[in-house]
Length: 298
Image (cartoon, rainbow, N blue to C red; front, top):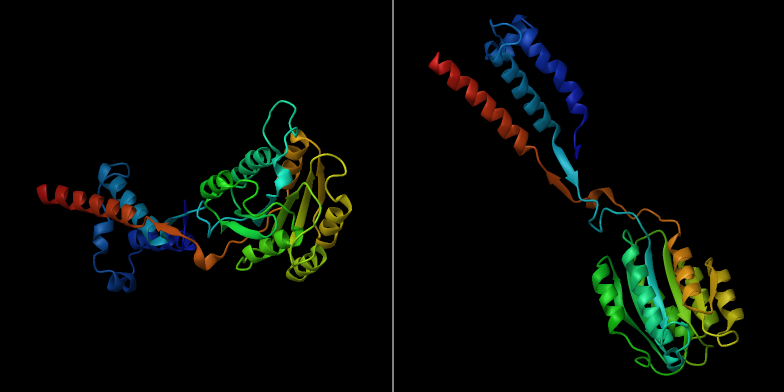
């Protein structure tokens, strides 16, 4: 809760005090009903207290109490993130977790879903790539929808090969309309670039031009993913490379990325405000009517 015009609280207090205390004719000339604010009763009598209450209600109403919706996507601070996930045939391999028969892709899905739900203040989108890449979920603040969409994905939906360049470019396309100061693509793969019309070098250059960081994660056994390429992509774009040889290391990689700095995407003119001036105004009216009713009975 805050006030849209908090400075009026400071201005109105001496004004109302003057209305009560000042006896000059010039003041009475402008405020013909000044007598209403006077009383011949003792200081602590109930009518005096009610009048002060009415004045306080009026001061509060004029200052316009509001609540700004901090959970609304237009009012929060954060970054825009796209998860670009490898959906090639090799992601169906098991053994990534010693305690589970789940495939690499299934484990990645669960960890990615958990990551999405923790990015409370951010917009998140999802890209799946194989022989080609497609946007599975646009960049949005609806975390439940993004998480649910990740669960619908499966390896092989985008083909059996690994088009890393396509995965990056499609992530950039998902961020095309983003107005956030900080934009990030998190690219995860367990293989080497062997498909697609766009090379990782070309895709990285585009990311640099647009000021988008790329965090790369290589998963699987040593030698399966192109560590040198992923390191270069991350370094040139201002991101960071992570190697994950098991489930625990993959979770740690996402946790480290989760600790990234946040930048404000808040814009004053788009703040969603809820106004509550009517309630203190009604309170003042009720108190004044009660005073008038009591006087009519006297």
